[in-house]
Length: 183
Image (tube, rainbow, N blue to C red; front, top):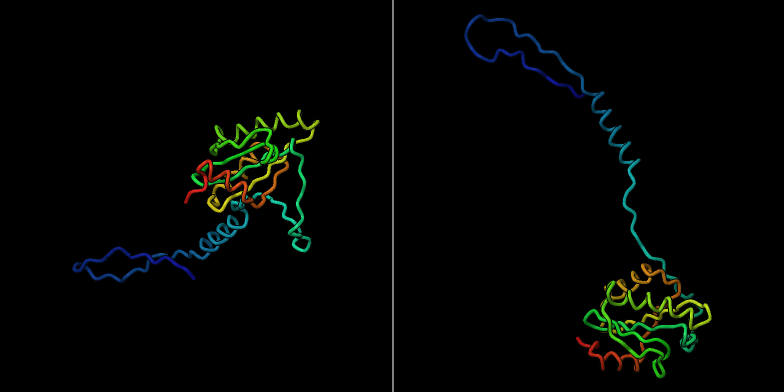
């Protein structure tokens, strides 16, 4: 039982000798019980921050075929090549015969976001009303933060169809030519 002891107030010596009076005792058990009930209540009713995660649809592991190449219409797809130095090289169509040739931009609202917004408006006009498909190809010289940033841009611009794919040797040559394949 928790209790609070109080002194009678006479601590000095001398004078008349009087019988020591016991101070009143205060029982703190109810106060401690109330404190624990309040702590428990607030712990159970508080909502903790939920982690924010982006859903990414991944292919079924049992059905992966190394020779399976998905054909994408040239007039619907842009490809983003993630290079070094926080820069992106992008092209519209196929690399051998692009509608827009490879161009280097930076991340952010003045760089790749403007490109994505422009292409999001232009592609349906060229592709008969079909929406834009973005192919993201990180190189070994890009960092994880670059991939997270470009996925954030997909969410900001509200692009519904995008995929992450392996980069090929021709695209690595484009990055080297543009100086985006540095250590």
